[in-house]
Length: 184
Image (cartoon, rainbow, N blue to C red):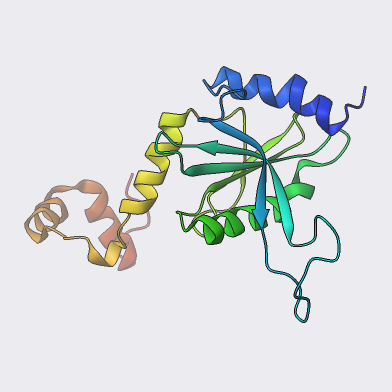
């Protein structure tokens, strides 16, 4: 049976969030229908309708510091989850802009399929369930602390020791010179 978005949220998404330790009824953990103020179209100074210049994120998962960690865009079960991809992305960027916080992680779901997207760092991927608050805070720390590989120190003495002793490296060297047809 097809569920409406409200049923999908109450019967499926809320339960999955609960399984990961999120209390949907606790506004210090989860904000439902977060009001996001957006820029009005060019040439428009006042909203023409009550909702122009506004978006409403279905769920925003908050860190212990009260800042947004993730946004969840929900669709009804009869819709493909990826339909919410662009909407969820816009919510994340607009929340970052409005609150001056880190870019939240992005989820979009129809209650049956859920996708996780670390915008600007990785492509969306299908997941089962939701991470805990601690997991999302750890993901955010890792993202914040990441350094480019070009800035990593390479211990050349270790490299030299491995190069001289590792059979697989010797095999690679030999095969790259076309001196060996098979190393094993």
